[in-house]
Image (cartoon, rainbow, N blue to C red; front, side):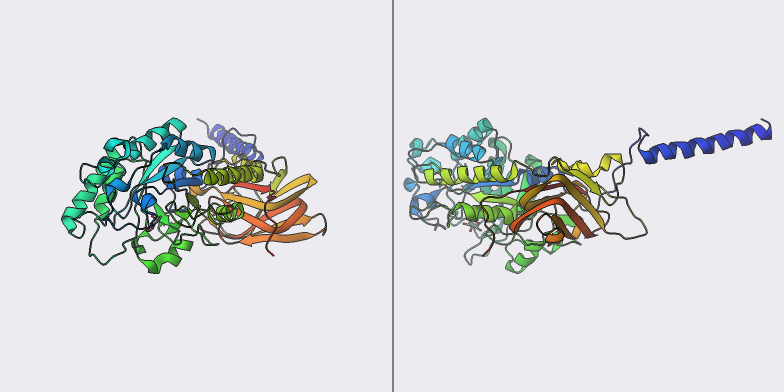
Length: 492
Ligand code: FUL
């Protein structure tokens, strides 16, 4: 080919690529800018599903329900267990209607009494008068939950005050694994297995956690394992339903030990440099005790809402315990409180007052990452700013409305599928009354969901989230919304 022609062709190639780059920049090109790299660690599928549940119901039911105790001795007679009006369908229905997509049952608490006819002990429903010893609470609830479209999980207390082999390392671990195998093979899909860290007496007993955990994932790959230390879900470090104001789903798994009180603070906040993704569950009871006691009443709505904001609103999942009574039903007053709770959450959160706002931002990575993506709650549609490689810059996104919006709750969510990133942010509102930008809230971490309740309602036409620092890469915001909580009067 003559030299001149070759030169012409290469000029065309260069021109063509410049032209396509321009199309790309102005968004006319059909090729999208790909998503940014994840910042590790990131959740695995079962953890992501768990996080999006937001609320799980715990059901403490067993021998203690009949002895009016919190911790049984293991010496109770199975004759005491007789819930004459037992109806697991009521439990599952209450859970479903109150918005819980998973129920976790105490299949065995510390007293060792089993709610299913275990082949490894006589200390179970089989020796009780209930349904002439033919009943099986685990089976009934697993079936009724399925019928109601609610998932099912089990709590199997490692500490067993009845079992004679407790304290003998090999025998008890084999016994426990035998029980675990029964629960994981006979009752359909199990979404969570709860390993309680309590060990209230001086018996020396080493639990073979690695073997237990392997068995769970071998038999039920979708089951999340909860314990003080994970591996899938960690304890939040308290039983009041309160996560740290700074809350990282990341933590160093190797420095966590089950039953170690000295790590409670670390569990409560996590670690921005943590090498493992182990988010937390906030376990708390609707009443004072975990088990039902005739003298106790459910907590008031205001307290339940406070718990919700302090758990779900701080990047955790709320595990709310609702204990069935001696009849075998969830008491009417608890049902009523849960109905109020659901209604309140619907009132506050089913309307996003910013839903029709126009959204703009400091910069945009590409068409697929537009600021308006924050108006839905899909975790995988998010706003991503430009990835400044050299210059570190502040990123912002703002909601703009023609009419003033009155709100007292700010909701911010990160696209955690690509890692938890935000470390420092502020929220400003262009106040209609003040006619100036006012700082309405600020914080460190965001994570899956961060909720801010404001001391008093704000009226604004422009609300801006300014992100000052984020970990490992640019911040990715999946949702940003404004709500009104009529139940909150602010702190006095
Ligand atoms: C604790 C137990 O000792 C309580 O009885 C209850 O089950 C709670 C959820 O965990 O460690």
